[in-house]
Length: 68
Image 1 (cartoon, helix red, strand yellow):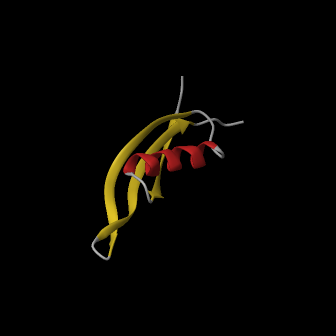
Image 2: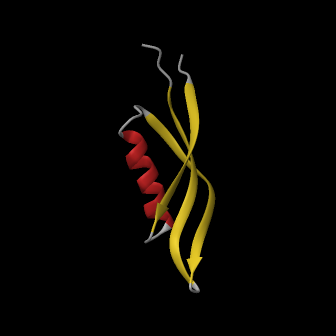
Image 3: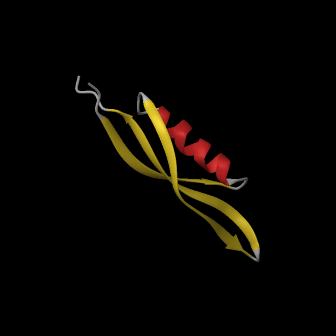
């Protein structure tokens, strides 16, 4: 039997939404083990001077919950 926990994180990138998601996963994987699913919940973009300055994503991550 397995138990999973969910958390939400926000990632940003100056390049793309895909890079913002990758940033969340890479950063979370440094502290969390057994990441399972990354679900993009929201996407938006910061605009400055009529141009996109940053891509932002809210990501719901699941990982296997362990009690050691």
